[in-house]
Image (cartoon, rainbow, N blue to C red; front, side, top):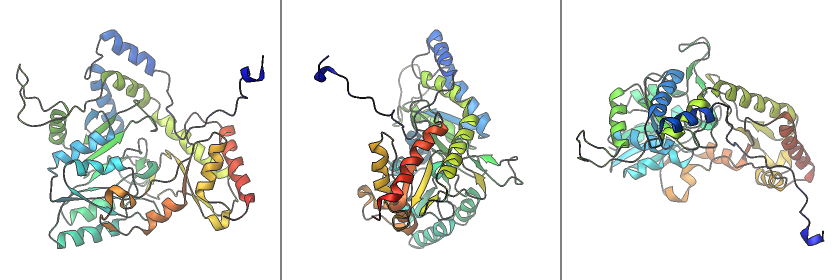
Length: 400
């Protein structure tokens, strides 16, 4: 064989940030859907998925949808959000948390996080609500994000919002399996499931391919308010009127989750507890493997809850460590390992240029110094060691 015909040497396998991880029963559940011929959207698997989700989370009314963004859109639509209204949202988040407010013509103002939890700062929220209402602005909703699988401090946020009569729609897209509440508090030994705190108007969840459980693509809108879910369900099916022909009195959307994807979701719910336990174990492996390195710290866990540790997230102080987060990301990429920066704050995004922000310095610092490490639940301790070896080696490359 000539040199030109030889295959290039095989490098190390790609280590992805958070790839899908099947539990073993998904294929059988999909086969059931095929056997029943419920291939189109809606069917028994969708009904079963919604029921199982409600039982697991403790949120009584659930609607399976095409994405978490669709769930947020419907939640805000059902709250009557429109032009002239304002939504207050976490600035340290993914854009799908806030873009639906823009779909509806509303303005978005952003609230910074606190250093202790990286989630929406309740005192800054109070300041924002006071400022906007004093100006005569109509704040229709507050959207806190459960960042990287850690619940926002729901009760403190609810207490603040109650003073102004503003509802909360919790963005729990990253937080399946996380818990909120002190062990001795209401909601059971480990607290309530993410998004299940009484008083929340609605919560949204994502089953995108990178989440801790996945349907490949999908989301859930969940609420204590059965009427909100009933209206959202109707809107998600093109707002069709109850008639033999196709009758429409208002504009709806094509947002329902397919029966096939719901079958995958049922299999994934079976392994959620194990997935959370493994992500938390991976976090501990990283802690052990990177202990003692100067200038490195991890996302803290809030005293009021239990994170699912969807991603293990570092803060890097370049002067102390000797390399920037971007240099570390590139060093990992050179070894076929995917890592990513922390979410870029929404108030720094070009699409929201000129938008209002309350605070901002904390999220800006977390973005500048943050790095998300591979955290998929199929990772082994050797995989973590592979990542850690590269990070440890970067310390010796001199100051940035």
